[in-house]
Length: 132
Image (cartoon, rainbow, N blue to C red; front, side, top):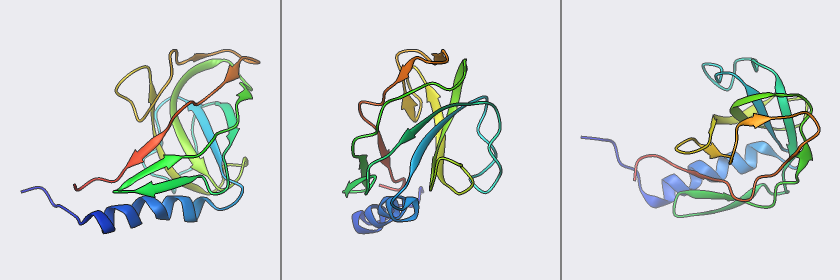
């Protein structure tokens, strides 16, 4: 049987992402595959650094719905592979990470081919806790 958690537990779980991200969080988008875990250093090329709102989002029923994320110009050209939510644009403290794709990924874009100088926008982004 799959482990299940209460809605309160799942909501607290994703709310902690917002708490850990702090007041100066950034959504960083990189090329390549994500590192094994958030404690590992980022790999690949940093394609975009998008400032997040403070707080980064709101939580309800085990879902963290991000507040507005500021659009920015891509800083490099490449194929996006993963994202990280970090406490700053330096990316040294990762709070969460996931995949980037055009469908079925943790964060989807119409195209994952980013070109330096092009505006990168995130219109909606949610993280759902496991164990419903």
